[in-house]
Length: 173
Image 1 (cartoon, one colour):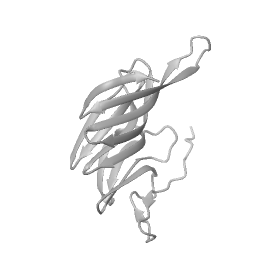
Image 2 (tube, one colour):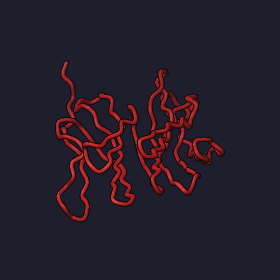
Image 3 (cartoon, helix red, strand yellow):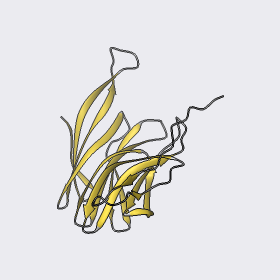
Image 4 (cartoon, helix red, strand yellow):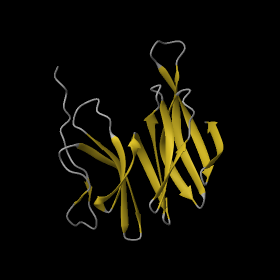
C-alpha cells in the first residue's frame, strides 16, 4: 500500500539575527517546540522522525547545534524551562498498553533524569513546566473515557509539583 508522506524539513533557530543554526537535517521531519537560553548556551527541545505518517517520533534536546543532542525517548514533547544549569522538559510517551504517560525530564549537565508523572490508568499529557530553585511545577491534563459517549474523552486539567525528583503534589484542577 501507499504510505502518506509528510514533507521532510529540518529544524533550526536564529541567534541575534545571524544565519540560522541547523539542528537537524532536511531528510526527516523535525520540529523544535521550545527554546531556553542559559549563558551562551541555547537549548532547543523538539522531535524528529521519518517523513511517513504513523512514524514514531524521537524526543530530542539540542544544545547549541546538531552535534550536541540528547535523545530523551520516543515521545511527544511540549515545553521546557531552565534555571542555572538545570533544565526541565515535559512530554508524554506511550506505555506497553498504549496509554500515554506524562513525563518530566530533568537535565543537569550530561545527566538526564526521567520522572514518570502519571500511572497509566488514563492517557496523561504534561504540557507546561516552570522551575524555581529545587521546585519543578508541571501542568498537564488527563483524558478520561466519557462513559456517556463511545470513543469520546473528557479532559481534566492536572498539576504536579516536584521537589528534586519526588512528586510532592499531584492533583486535578
